[in-house]
Length: 101
Image 1: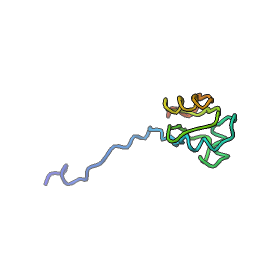
Image 2 (image 1 turned 45 degrees about the horizontal axis):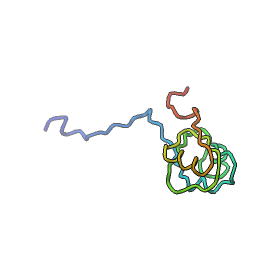
Image 3 (image 1 turned 30 degrees about the vertical axis):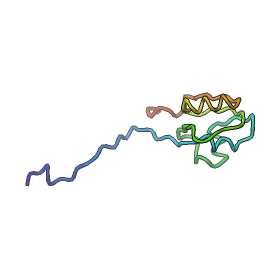
Image 4 (image 1 turned 180 degrees about the vertical axis):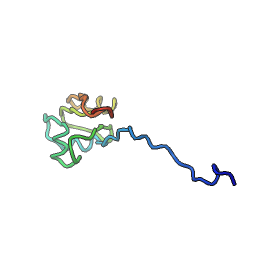
């Protein structure tokens, strides 16, 4: 049997891929109205472990409070729902790219 059939097939793992922690709007609804939600606030609430990992906000659930969200990535639908609740959503530049040295 030829060598290429004897060896197991191997997949591809991108070592440069940046995995973001996913946060839903339901989690953000637990914060007080008018507060600023950043990485440090998520660490204090116990949603993420440290401030050096990227965070993405998804539009799972609803938000009923006006809050200021300053995180790495925010989906378009989540931005619309935060704005509809009276808050603001702002993407920060830190932690979004994998080429930081």
